[in-house]
Length: 53
Image 1: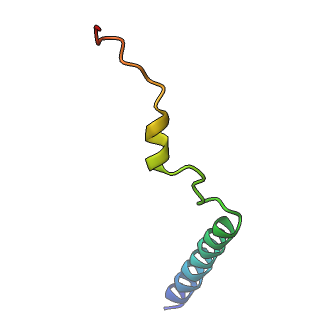
Image 2: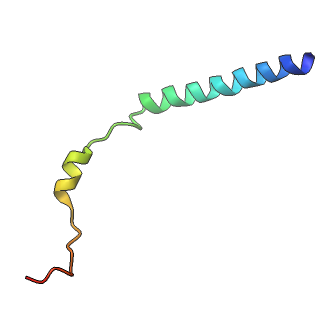
């Protein structure tokens, strides 16, 4: 039974670490997309060479 208490405490510690890492990444603008996907599709620089004009 004491192993169960140790595993619960360890899982709460790991979950708390991941929660803090997520909060830190949100606060440090890791998830901000300066140019959205809608704008990136307008600047597609890949030109298909197989199209003959």
